Amino acid sequence: MKKILTSALLVAMAVSSWAQTPEEKGLEIAIEGDKRSEGYGDSKVKLKMVLIDKKGRQSSRDMRVKGLEGKGGEGDKSLMIFDTPKDQKGVAMLTFTHKVKSDDQWLFLPALKRVKKISSRNKSGPFVGSEFAFEDISSQEVEKYTYKYLRDETVNGMDCFVVENIPTDKYSGYTKQVVWIDKAEYRAVKIEYYDRKKSLLKTLVSQDYKQYLGKYWRPSLMVMTNHQTGKSTRLVYEDYAFNVGLKEKAFTKNSLKRAR
Image 1 (cartoon, rainbow, N blue to C red):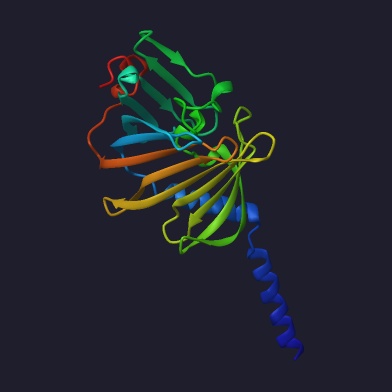
Image 2 (spheres, rainbow, N blue to C red):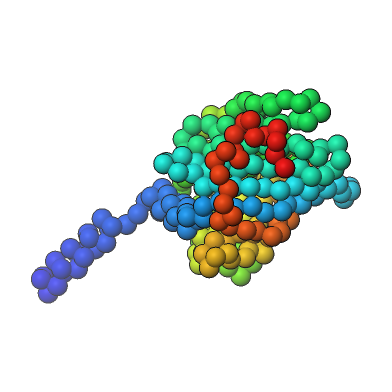
């Protein structure tokens, strides 16, 4: 009996030593989700942005987004080009995502014929009047947050991990994000954003995920709802394409003025 009890104690001690902390599990989930999106190379997609005010009135913008996967430890690059409305045609935004330091973003305004750098201090500001902030437009690098697993929960019939992300960037407009990640494919299906006063500011819901190249999942619809203003923004994605041969030279400040 004594031998059995000793063996049981050793097993219990081993299991205890293997147990993850909530922080370790949260980081593990984030790393796995990031790993599953690696290797896409480059991409392009058509995007319709629909702005909805608190009275339900709508206005829309059509744009195209090009993306280039980061190499050598750097983050991804993206180029967003506006086609409509007429007064915004030709507006373009270039984003260089970095693993640790603040991202670099530039905005080309055709009316002024100049490229404007977005200050790190202004990343929390609204992007072209939408409920998305400039920092929401960047790719979400793992190193930009600390993590804590909170619980398991079901969302729209999907079993999800719920993880708290704390931004490490001192200029972030958020004190934390709470993210629901489905266990099957590690896709973010819902994110709650908390402002600098630690109050719930916005909720992003990503829907109608489709798989491309047998590996990469992308949402067809994203809806950002601002609980404090009553406004919302819908992003509708169409015609995703990957490995289309985009080059580094298409993602430079000089290329912004020639973006088509």
